[in-house]
Image (cartoon, rainbow, N blue to C red; front, side):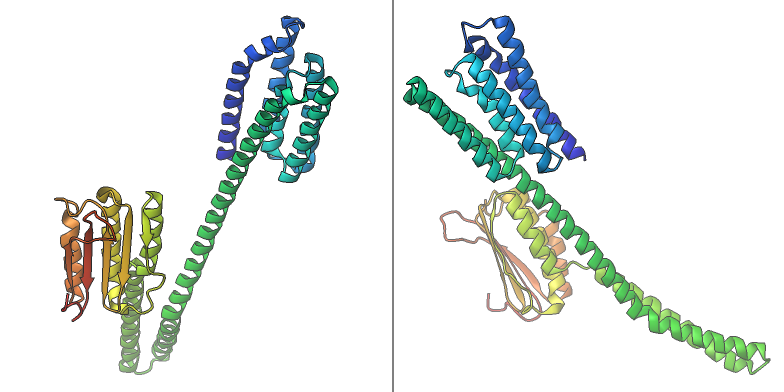
Length: 364
């Protein structure tokens, strides 16, 4: 709702500015007409076109069409009154039509308007003199229509992203619920059974040693379940390489860097995916912040990752403490991290980050 109101405000402000700038044109439109009458007519027509967009934009097309047709008819009335030398008057209504109606109606109403102006020009003998005006009117209408289409496309993309985020959140909730059920379901059921057995033994005055054994097993089961929950939470917090590849693509695209990224991580050793995810995240972050690169290439093997950019090489402090942190993560998986110059089919000396795990990379 806030975005809609902001768009309406911008439309009002932009239209008001254009209306003010067009007032001198109205004063010169028809020298034989009284200015005291031409100016109020022009102002009222401008306000009507200005108010129509935010007032009707959010309503169904069935209501938009008669409003646009009414504005176009009013424009024709004013044009007939001012004279055929002022076809730009119809541009007000055509801009509203291009902003509010589907493409079919935009083409239909614009085409009928152009045809009407040509017929009128032929009847008055100045059809060729009106051609530049017609080209201007058609061009401006087309530009407004394209801008309106882009705005609507961006809105649809924004809605699609929001839906994707909601679906991703729902899937993640389902996954968490499923994992917790799998982890705790059996353990808590067994805990409940053994605790109930121990209670019944004690209630009946049975063997305290048996009850103590059952309570001990309950304690052990609860401890195991707690360890499983902690392990699961740690796994949720773990950086995932597949997610980092998606984030890297979005981050690089947002700053205009061409990204050559692998499409899958299936061939990579699962034990290295988290560490390589940290390497990718830190490297891409530094490319975005400091490298001034145009291209980035990421190559994955079963036990190594190589990230090369064509940026400013290896300036001092580009990684800072991040490089030592990555080195520690790679040592934790029996790997190493190395950096150096790299080229991406160009003359600029870029920068390469190479990480490998286990015994890989010995030949590099």
